Image 1 (cartoon, rainbow, N blue to C red):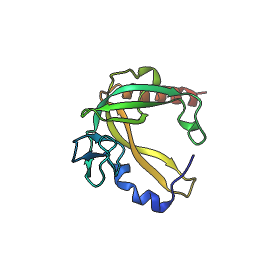
Image 2 (image 1 turned 90 degrees about the horizontal axis):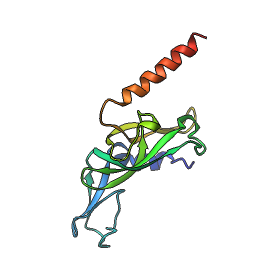
Image 3 (image 1 turned 120 degrees about the vertical axis):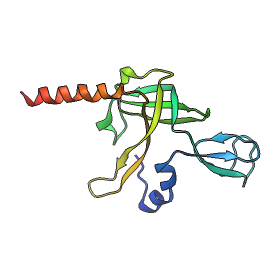
Image 4 (image 1 turned 180 degrees about the horizontal axis):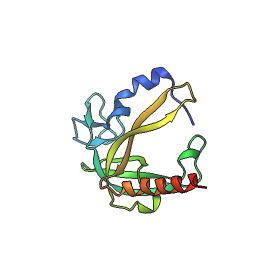
Length: 154
């Protein structure tokens, strides 16, 4: 996995800590991620930053059971395309739920979570992920707590 250095980390902090996209002032199209040139009408210099809505629904998803290097701890994990309330689609990890509980059309909201860290003494990078909009995610942690408690009784 490619790790960003400290300067790059700070240059991109606005996008990491808020869901920022772009809007073309010429054609009105909103898109993610941010771009300097509109992918729709190809105009330069007429693109502005916009904060995207924090809620949407799962458009499509997959469960990663054999993770790439650096993500072994999280497996299995869910990667989804989330369609936001304004129609913009964002690819992100879905957290706070079991893979079998995710479904197409599931309402989700953005949350702020750890993305990765550069070893024990490196930068810890945070960013956005999505979680279920309802309280179904609580069941995931209740199940984990029961397993942990039963393992300690051994």
